[in-house]
Image 1 (tube, rainbow, N blue to C red):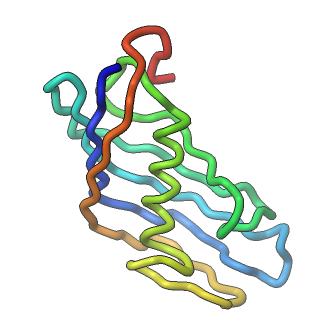
Image 2 (image 1 turned 45 degrees about the vertical axis):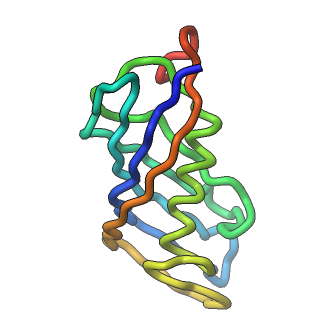
Image 3 (image 1 turned 135 degrees about the horizontal axis):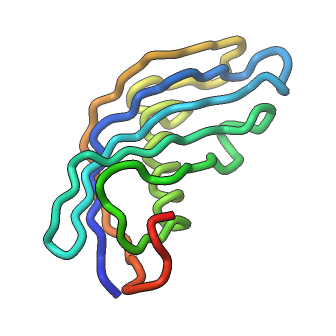
Length: 133
C-alpha cells in the first residue's frame, strides 16, 4: 500500500465559539493547509475545511473534515486523514493547544487566528478505488 506524506503548515481559525452559556451555540469552522507527497510527486496547494457541529463538545467529540481541496485527485484514505487533521487542530487550539490554550473558559469567541506550524506525518493510501472524494 502506498504512503502519503502530509506536512501540516498552517491552521486558519475562521470562527470558534468555545463554551458559550448555551451549549447549542458551540461551534468551530477552520481551514488546515498542508503539502502532500504521493509517489514522489509534491502537491503544495492543499487545504481542507474542518468543522465542529453546533452543540457538540469540542474537546471530546469528533471534528468533521471536509473534502480535500487542491491539485491532488488520486486515491485517498479519508478516515485516517480526518484523525490526523483532528490531532493537528487540537495541537494548536484547546486544552492541549500550543497556539491558544483554553481550559475551563466560558464565553470565548475567536476568529481570524493563523497558526503557522510544521508537523509531518505519513498515512497509507489505497492503490486504487477510493478517490480523493
